[in-house]
Image (tube, rainbow, N blue to C red):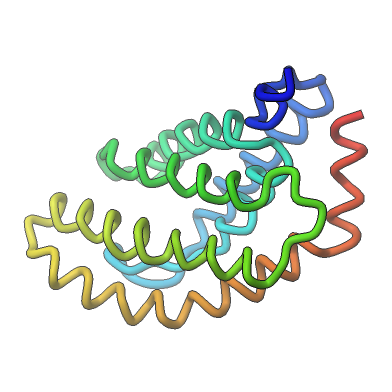
Length: 178
């Protein structure tokens, strides 16, 4: 039973499902407000994704990642590309491994998690997906996205540390999983 709890494989109460649905809706709405072009975008969805991963674990957060990716693509009017769903799953998994069941999130932990996502998902994997879709060399998108990620890395790190260690947000978890 400990194995299942460790990976977030626990049944959700009605309250837990409701909060998860609200967080999904918030992620979709926040994802609509992006800064940048179609190849280089910045939004604050990473905060919601990290909260879902911290509170619900890898099982629920990866499932949510696929659903939100699909719904967000429907709203965007863009064709669906499953590579971005894989990226969303991996991001949720990395956040879950780093933050799930951690009472206090340390600076080194946040830096490592954000660095892994920035390098392997944002820079490498997502640049590859965009290069496939746009029929443009990978090196072009990697170079363009490198600048964006150098700017967003410290912003994401500071915001995640502050949000995940915020006392008010920490106090919400016990009310969700009573």
